[in-house]
Image (tube, rainbow over all chains, first blue to last red; front, side):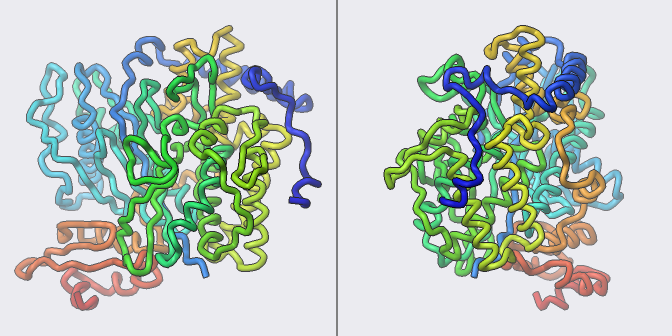
Length: 65
Length: 495
């Protein structure tokens, strides 16, 4: 394990109960990523199925392997 | 010396018939497959004798309900790329042909997606107005039901099964770090979606045992099914039911490539340290729920380490193994690419998880869903988040959320398109696929380990295919070129 210890950097700061909230993009690429993400989210809104409630409610599968 | 890890993936797809009244997924799956097979007949113009008797795709009644006379005999087709396309437990399922390395698996797995897409298109020309078949490449309906994406790996029979279990278990529990497809919410008993709003794996909640034969309930992390479909004295086929269905090519590549490599190391007994976990089933779930990658896992030797540490340990052993033994068992150049990408991904997980949003399914999904949540001010348990979690996996190209993410590709669309009809050149799938291309009307049955010919007048003739690495292009191309009829082929083979 010695080799691995040398290369290891500290993991990003995350608290257990906030794990889902605290997941930052890197600061360097932050702006670019945000802009790309905004475009992506625009696109998603335009292709999303109309009635989320109904689709989710009606989506049921048989158990498989 | 480890034997070549011939491998493949079999995926059960989610299916919905919209506008069709009461749900009958077996009939919908049958219709879907028959529509595709029929469309091939029209394209190629051959007299393809249906592998799937009974179900005429055109037999729809006007009111939209599935005609009651649709047979429940389960459809089963073998395609000219060597794949099997069939109905399994009320899902359409494609099993890729046998591949000789992880990259080939990516090609034929993506080809399987294209086959499902073409099937939807073929079905839509036959369905009444207002009806539509939707197919999803996922593993969970959010209502307690799960269906699988299984992998298969060829192994040397002489390796004791206990050694396989021992060596692969900690690896299986932790490989979801790069192989997980991501999931909104949680379905483990006693755990609510408030506790776990988002997790790494679609399948983790459904696994209850460490080792076992079951596949549909009490699912085990290591499955003991023993049906080699080849020479059972020499080989074992390890049947893996744990994995998520992946859309990201890098996730699929690493899932299969690293597993093949670890199995080769197990065959060669090159895993020096016992990394056994105290509670593998519970740990499998905890790793999935811990998207912060910080939780320490308990090993039976008393030590504790993160899931990432466990993967680094396997990686380190794999690097040493490659230097000592070479990577022929997994393909030299593919094996080197597996190592290189494995290292890059583990480094990314260690330093900046979100940097992997263009490579790994669960990270891509997490980034998209978090962005959507923040834009619309939604909580994770909002129905719209679950709708996103379904539409992410929708295979319709105009609807798929995954397709909009610009996730990095490994293989070209041209390769994938060719693989819809062409088999790998490197395994027995080649012989199967080429015979089906040329002489489908003379083949009455095609299985993994044999082809059965009817050349008229004689009794049926069975050509055994018990060696997965025989029947390759190198072995049979010249022979197939020279034979002008299946009868001549059989004579030349001495069958």
